[in-house]
Amino acid sequence: MTLKQNDFIKIDFTGTVKGGEIFDSTKKEDLEKLHAGHTHKIESKPFIFCIGHKMFLESIEEYLLGKEIGKEYEIELNPENGFGPRNPSLIQRIPQRVFREQKLNPIPGISFNFDGRVGKVLAVSGGRIMTDFNHPLAGKELIYKIKILGKVDDLNEKIKALNDFFFRQDFPFEIQDKKLILKAKKEYSNFIELFKDNFKEILGLDLVVNSPESESKTQLS
Image (tube, rainbow, N blue to C red):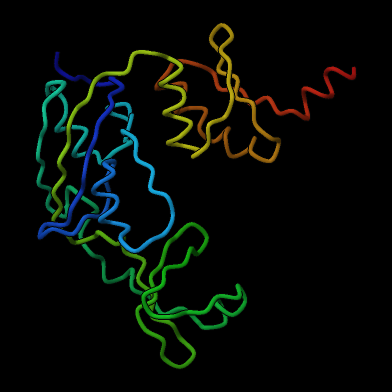
């Protein structure tokens, strides 16, 4: 059986920078190498995603089309097919007051989130901080080793995979007719609704958020 557009698949993978450095993996032994010296518990699980919806690198999704379940593949990516070339214009001088206002200590090597843009501090000089907003893997050649474990056909498992990918949370849910009802606190509603089109395109279901607060009001009325 070969893979096609819109298939949900389950894979194990390890990504390395060409030369040996691991930067991402679903395999416990490789995650232990990546996080060597850390004391937190390392959890590993296969990655489930839908081909053709940019849930993985687009070049890898295209490569997997027509490939066979159960087989292992090694994919080499140049920067253009990975995380892009390095862009010198993304290395910027940020006034120190920006860090001070956010109560951040700009130490070289540390990364911070600036309104959704992650920047790595390169150098501190006077009142300006040299900050690199390039992706950490920009400009690097990459190697992915991927094993296709199988297709995912169960709708509940697909929904859980999308919840994990988009929200990093396992929201309770139920399906009624053509509606997917996610149960989440009210403060999550606006964020979740940003992904209505994704759920509609991938699953053909209308995404609805049902908060405990709204349920309580309904019961009281």
